[in-house]
Image (cartoon, rainbow, N blue to C red; front, top):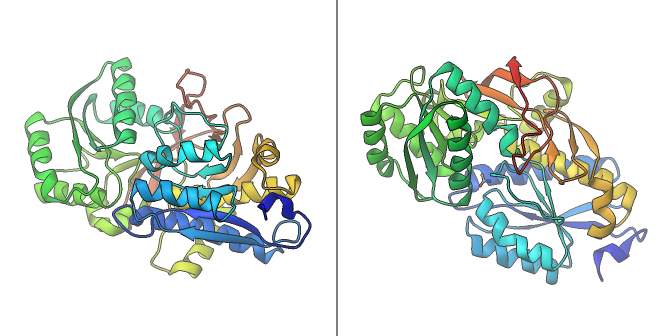
Length: 383
Ligand code: ACM
């Protein structure tokens, strides 16, 4: 029986969860599973949605885009699901996109990405470039200089994100002195030629869009080379508390990340979220921007479902658009026009405890501007 025809029957609401729990992306995607699950558990503790429990149907695509595609199809066709929480890499999102569009499912995507995309079948709850890259570029050029070296994993997000950064930089009178891509499974050894080149070119900033386990290898190789983050930091949009924990706080210390959320943010909502997360998954575990988006998007979904009382995307989506939630990062909302989240914009520097000290933040929510039309550039102020 189709899920949306089950309203008021007391049957559970079944939802798909599609993040890698194994493979080279599990380092961050497993945390997104955790964020999704604790939100589902919170909602069920309060009696579910309209008296019906949320039940996750979880698949592990093992960091393989082909499996993302196959499992998305299985979820919709065989499991009869019409809501999927999932995807970290933009390549996995793009693998899933034609399926969710053709079979009319709603994908909730809790990861920062390169922008320049709109789908009526996706709710985007991670940052678009105007909510992270713009402020980061300004901060870096003012503080460190305007000669950037770009290093990324070799797929669509880093290449597009670097294109955006190159443009932002040139508008500020800076330029890119080098640009390299490594495989998604890059090891410490693979970064040696890159770091040799960086030593020769002596940039002011290394802008990294390396993702997953390779992030750990990049920062460790940087430390092996004896570079000093106070002089030439790695600035990233994808290095969170999870990757810092894996590389060691001493290796991550001094490097910069732009994100809507950091674990150490003050406030009762975040305190309760972090405590719950640690109680559920271990005191040594950390929250991060991707967990937080995975968490708050389930709450946004549940609120919309309460009003729609249906998982049919045609009925549910209008309830999502314009909705707000008091998230751990601060109140967030979904822009009614483009289905992307209005988020807070922050810049943090990793400290010796594996946490980020917030250096700058926006004074209000930054609206999404995924096509960089220039309408949504948040100026940040010292935190
Ligand atoms: C990403 O691939 N959107 C980080």
